Length: 232
Image (cartoon, rainbow, N blue to C red):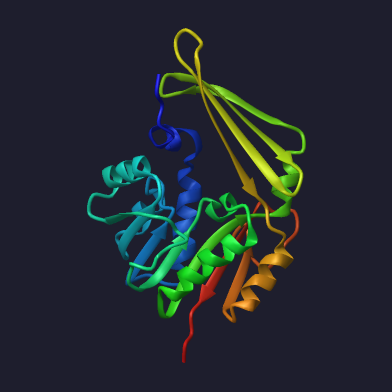
């Protein structure tokens, strides 16, 4: 048995209502031009935005890009890391959703990605990204377990908060005789104050939202940051 996470990703986590919220959020700031979708995954957000932008999807996982191309055959794709954009041009907007920055386990790495994105924005361009709030770490102090069947495969998904604001995700997928294929990865939650300090060190203007509400609001799950590049 060999299961690609890319093949089952949407069945596990996709929520069309949320995808529409993200698309509408972006369109509230900018609605035309070129757009780079970093860590684009299977392309659910690109699909919502491609009628407004010329979109390029970038991801480090070739299997994710295969799914992306099935959904968005008219969009350009690039196999690469969100932390190294040196061969790319500039864009009117760059998006980085799916709490992708939380997969980076050091603040220096986070700063590198944000710096790269800002460098590749056109003047007056926007960089949008989301991150887990500190509440997300508190939510999984007690282990969370989800069980079900995805694309014919029984699965278990556990989420457990670890020390140092780390969250572990562990997947087990089972074949017809009970043999398991497992996958495990960590995310790190960054305190709001650390992110503000980081962004201020980059001398960029930004707005922050909490679950799509403007401002830093406690007891929410996601921060959304909107950075604007102004060189003049």
